[in-house]
Image (cartoon, rainbow, N blue to C red; front, side, top):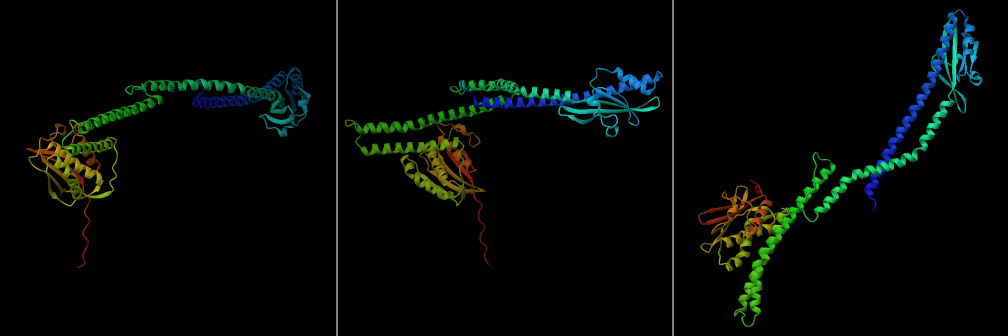
Length: 459
């Protein structure tokens, strides 16, 4: 199994964090122990000086002279690593005990603060730490000097530092092992998520589990589930589009195949080949119109935005569409009639607005009768331009509602109506349907451009 780059990066990150934390902990421990040893040595000097003064005070209290009490006390203190020197107020040494190398290096009282240990250079191995404690015993002023070398303290600190440095490889290995283990635990939910995603691939109806309360993995699963919802909707939309395309093209294609086979069959071929060709051409035109409608419907379903950048004259658009549709209407036995055509200018897409008029005419021809002509008008109503197509016929399906407002029509019978509704909405307008008696009216309204003010004339 190949190593995961993400796992390696997490391992390196966790290892660096662990190693850094342990190093900081060790450094803190080292500084703490160093300070503790330093304080302990100073405490030993302070205790030693206090014990010497207490013992001398006790001897003097029993009647011994101060000088004799000092000598007697220091002779009794054997086996000490510290050096003890007692002097009078003039600095004359009364007695001394301890290593001669330390006693000889004790500086005069003028260089020492009272009651605070002070370090002086001794040798390469350490310094000399001296504590001065003055007192008055039996009416005589004395000074007690207690000194010790910091060599042992420095040796312990160096040994501790060496041990910490030597443990660095072990710390690094432990950090890497711990980081790898934690990275595996961290990525385990992602592995389970990947397995779940793999099972979803054949069936988009499945969803990833989401726990409560959610964490980062659950939020990722939620986002993925929402993506699956969108993919499933897109799949359903594509399926509907394919079925709609097959339904819309089946009838004209059947007509084309039937007429062409009949025309190619010599024994039973049609007496009027031109008539067969006209029927084939009409079916082909119908297929072309349906294909164009399907592409427009797909753009509408995809939410394609229309750039509204051109100034369009609705009356001119209606005249152009009526002229283009006259042959189609004549072939269906319908008549077209123009009503009022007011000059109305809007901001929009001229091609789509023309397609809207053609679709309104196509819808009127499909659902109308030959009793009366199809009437087309363009009028201004307030701040809107309204294109109206009126015909006599059975009306539209009930999906449009009793209030005459557009709802979502049946796709099989209302493919063109879906396109009309999309074009109207994209132009900031509306599509309305009304019926009075046997007359059906479809109106597409679009906001008009504000009229320019008339030019001023000089008086």
